Length: 120
Image (cartoon, rainbow, N blue to C red; front, side, top):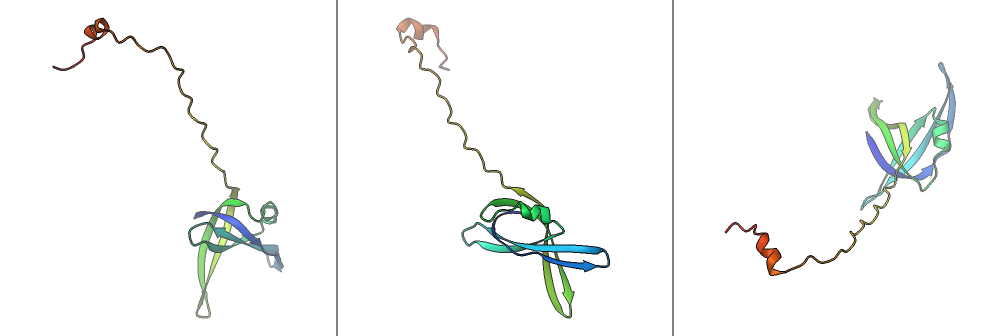
């Protein structure tokens, strides 16, 4: 899944050690600009270099995986980022150039008699 959002807040990292080695998890809150803006907490797992490049207030396109799991009768949802790109602002289109004004075509009786494209 992919969404566009503005970085609202970057939370401090959480570090730990598991059987597989050291890990780092950091959460970033994104605000999705809409009429009624919503905030989404996205987890970056072992991606400290990507989080370091984020700036609060900047817009990004975020690709995430969403997964829910059950533990002791309660459900927990995890939103994990796997790619993030700065949002490309659309460059304003240049104004179309007007063709140069030329001389007016002659409107004489002889010119209109030669061109007769009317169906009747």
